[in-house]
Image (tube, rainbow, N blue to C red; front, side, top):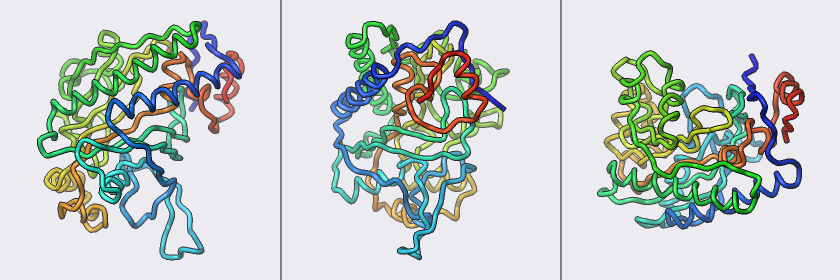
Length: 336
């Protein structure tokens, strides 16, 4: 089934060389703004990890990682990362980061089971960041403070992009509205989770949707979230209104990470007690890892939003089904 949608009257805002210049501008500008907003240092990161380490992110629990054997390392099975959520926390310990400081890196992933549409690709590129916090920082106020700092960095980048490319006219809302998944369900009980987000974002253009992963009073979840990195009480998604697609648009998934108590609780709730024996999880349960918070911020997502593109393939190179290629070609939408 093809899920590609081209809005009526849409025209690609930039072409060729100018599009590449704008993509470069967003990526270089935003990472500098993010670095200073959150006090981060750039580090190198892996493209793949050992399956048996427990470091890969299993996302919603059903996605299959790309795996491969390594003849020179017969005891290992390589897995292309889905994200670096757990690797970053281990890296903070190994590199000796201290409270108030953190790291960021380019994360490139393959999500082979992704359903393709205007905003989803099998290729994922994002800035992954993580910083060490204190026990006193594990609260909602510190989470909200960090969200506002990230949104400020996003909006500063968007404003600078408009000055550099006057033909672009996307403006983003700096004021963040905070709401929990339960409050959102109470507002729109008859809508699907995605429909709820879009309904709320029509009025509140920048939103942090909190507490993703936990079961709601209806018995369902707003969305899945692995039990072994975010604390489901202290996490969320940064959503912005996409005026081209006229829908809610997620730019970041983030949160304060699990400590020993919340990890044990969430593993039990998710029926994943077997993970307690994996090296990463043992270290965490034994208190050997620092308390952290972190997240991922989509690079192509930000470019798409700020430039005003209708399809993520306009700002990143990936593989697409023939029907998507045909729909875009007929509409004059150039995929990279």
